[in-house]
Image (tube, rainbow, N blue to C red):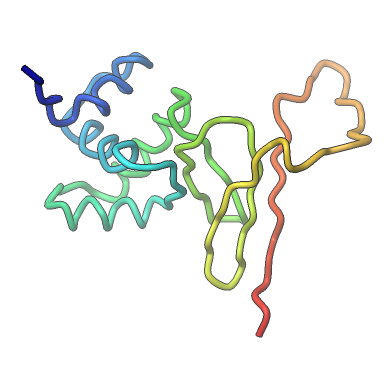
Length: 140
């Protein structure tokens, strides 16, 4: 006999795996973020999805939760310009294309781009990661 997976199980497992208490709001937002394929989402987009799913949550709570998920390693924040961040469910090493006119963000696999001649890090620091954003404009 096949047993059905409990609703929210994948989201619950993710939260438990990083030691975050699975509150109702965290669980609901985790489900929206992680139940499908990897994706890039802004706080405003996720807030809209939550409201559409009859999940009453404030935009401030969405921001706080995204920041908690990022600090725990569940998400990666991609800052495309001052005041404009996307949260990426793909936390593997990779880069991005950013279409400026539409705000679309698309993954570039890490092995498709090589960064050369990186300067030495200042004394007392080390390079943690290199993030490359290739900005695109659409042809008219």
